[in-house]
Image (cartoon, rainbow, N blue to C red; front, side, top):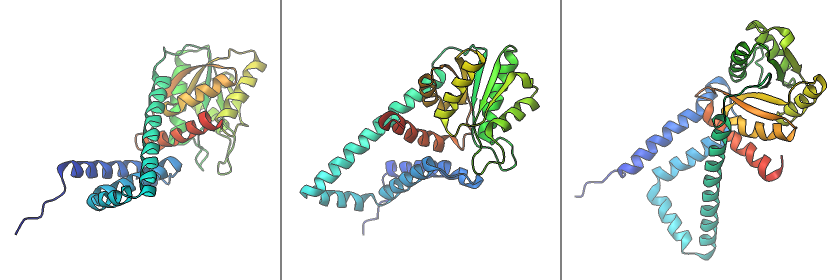
Length: 262
């Protein structure tokens, strides 16, 4: 009697990697965080896991479909779409990294810190606090610089993002006279458009040190230029457990901006 063989080593390795990625992408759920980037990635990884576990059956089904004209067309379109999506994501990733880390060190007397979620307690979320820490360090090293903090108040936020950000910087020792608040914006485009108008009104330089997460820098810089600003990137570190989901979410935001004008 022939001994039944287990799955090939390559499948076992891929299954293990897939499970680890699933855990990484899903870990923010423990903090009550869920967004489209996480959901899409988790679904894709679950489908890949099913494909790897049931590899022989899936290969057999694909072979039967390939033998039919309609099935061949569907599989060809799926394969082409998947390949195009992977190439697009790789290009986006390269541009995102280049925008965040590819330029010279920022040097301007105007700093713009983009808002993010405020916790129910009124304190900046971990993501926003990271941006503020990066901004505060720059302000400490450049005592003549002024700072714009930008972000309105969401339906689930007790105060505006700008107010929470200003209070945080003051607690870090930043002189309130150096902090300007923009508290109307509801998204990144409005953040930068309203900041550009405020800079124009105050006669301040439109060459700005732009503080936001690395994954967000490329799109934020494009929107800054659209608003008439000249951005210099200053990327803060993103929490490691949150990073992959936010990175995938940014791919969708970039696709909407670049292909649909959103």
